[in-house]
Length: 173
Image (tube, rainbow, N blue to C red; front, side):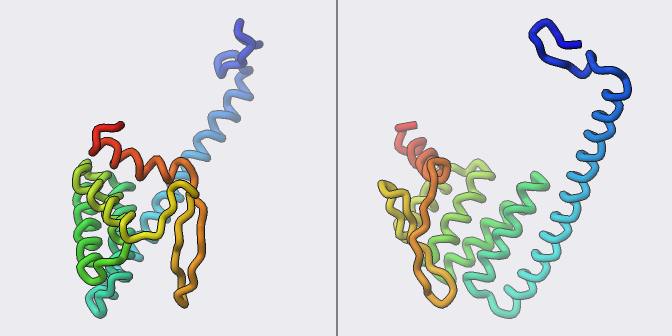
């Protein structure tokens, strides 16, 4: 029976329907937890692979990939230590290739998660200086394998994620 506002609530449903919904929600929760455990396991596997690769040949790309894996592990686990390790990996990537804009941007993302906003703003600014970004056109020039270049559009949320830290530093936001 609908509630006064015309909305059916769980308490208004007959017991068999309520039970089916409850079981379905439990199954979805269980599936999400299982997916998270699988994803976490894959990230930990990737972490081990990138750590070994970085020991053998510490290229900017390998170090940046290691930093990205550590960043996601830190976010999933809510672990500042993983995020600190990610920043260190990105620092090493930037040291190996100072013009690697993606490493600067990823470093900034990790710094935001650590609430080190001043450093994050500087890293974002450096990434923007190095990247081919047209904010007015909302296009970024990316280079892929074989040095192919493409113009890729980006949306409002991407622009806002860069504008927000910069605006907070300049007092505009």
